[in-house]
Image 1 (cartoon, one colour):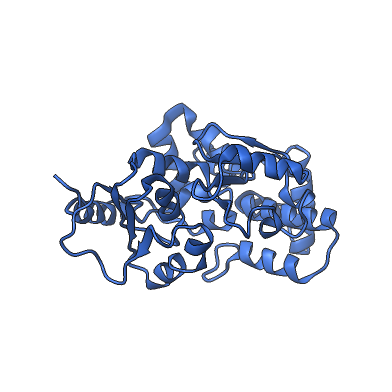
Image 2 (cartoon, one colour):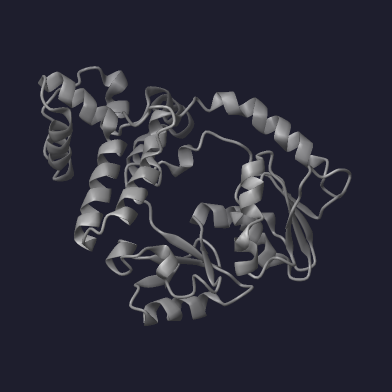
Length: 311
């Protein structure tokens, strides 16, 4: 099942599609079918069990095709307490948290998590402008538009592989560092920091460096220091992307945790449940842990990072 430990279904699909020379239409169908079945796993698996024995892969595929075309479910779930978890294929604990935190909006949020995510780029102001990037991509036949989520955001309409079958790295401007793939939510987090030219900024939980690079485009002649407790992520953040983005002279990944230095701005993207990326990583919905377990860790990280902020 998609919740098995160590199974990264999204990575497996990408690997197979890169290896096999499928036509673009087949690649789209395969990826969409796998992501759809994984996203709706809870509902499809229950339906398969209630309908009786049979070849699981073929029955799951048949049930998914029915679901895709809005056919009614062939089984009945009488217990209303589990209706939201069943209908929107979320773990019961997550359904309960959504209802508690969002009330009447809970079902619409859960439904949105079943959709495919929109591909969003961040124009790199160290290399180009958003207007120039939009013109560059449109000139290559890629349908893009500026997004309202940030001053740098550019969205691609539809499936990228329909226009560039080889994938994102074959878009014009990629090898020149003109853009990064970055969700609109992550771009808004960078905006909220309000980093200004000349500022000295710390990205305290930098991960693989996406927000670090975005901050580098904000500080001009300033500096961005980045650190993460995960050495593997620090190594990734310190890799070739910084040079490609023109940020090697601005953004620095620290080998050790900062000690005593103070910063104009400190960004903390604290460890969390990752519930916000279910559309891009549908298999994660089956490995999510209740969010309450993260609260203590988040508070500790926030208190530690606060000590680095200038008075």
